[in-house]
Image 1: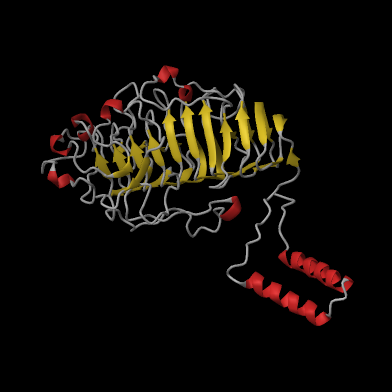
Image 2: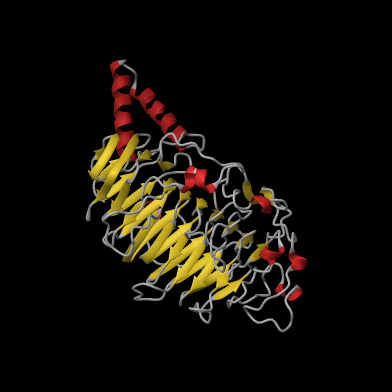
Length: 481
């Protein structure tokens, strides 16, 4: 990443003082008065009331002209400018594309961002970046069907990071209406669209504080590499299938403080399949899953968290509300249960079918005494993982108490309430989920000097919270409210 712009504050004030001195001398002011003026200004600038001088935005290479973009691209997409992505747009190996905050990128039918070099999408809370369809009207209401909802129709093919892409950083970015199959791209993609596809051995994917809305299949597919997926919001993902975060062999990282609403199949999935040079390992903690898995056609799959086929990891502090299944450790092909740890996961259900799958039947999820509700209160003493049990005493119990979401009478609308809208998934001060989590573990990469951090990496690898779910009371979790 060359030609980065930085701000020289010393040079700024030197030139300012020279200009001030010349001004005073031209008006025959005394040097004692000039010195006094300089001292007053210096003192004012050092006071706590002094205005802050904002730093200029970072650029890489040449700026990309606003308007239609096609073919090869590199340099900087500029802040507050409007672009249109046409066809297959390629960031070549060795090149960098940086997108500044506030940029708006409209997508056209079949467009794709093919990243062979480096992608840095650096939005901000105040000025996010947008990849979206122009003039689309979102249908976030309880009357529109899946077939008529533009969220599930698919306009473009998303962001495909080829195996030469060593770094993809996406922060405060909206990615919407993905669903057209990839065409003529290498790798184990099979033409299937993804919001973001990443598969570089030894590469790094950072996905933070971003929004995904509407897709026809998996949202984030990680075939290999190191990843930190934190504080994102996923809504209307998959019309009849598709996982939200789908991690495969030779992958290792964190999935935390994300909000999932109405995913078609699973929210967070880990599977040690593919070219596994090392075991798939995912730490899944402090996420909020709402209404997941109900559009999946076949039974036995979908919902909140899924580990299978030799994957391992830590699964703590997740809030699971009205999902088709609770944490699912698959027994055939089996997840690596011996090297995985679970606990302090919170389940809530409004029907008996939901409550009977807090611990999915036919699988090997281990009930933990720190879970809510306490398994000892409803599981028989003879219970073994995968057994059928009676969850009738759990229906409508342990309301997590969201600030604004109609828990208690939503299940009739569970398929269509797949969006965030004006709902507020923070917890009320009286929520039974507060203070019931564990902090007795550490995410990956916190002290790893090799994992990229800062402007061109993770802004923050947020530590576990004792408040269950993606919105802890300390405000350090998901920022989308």
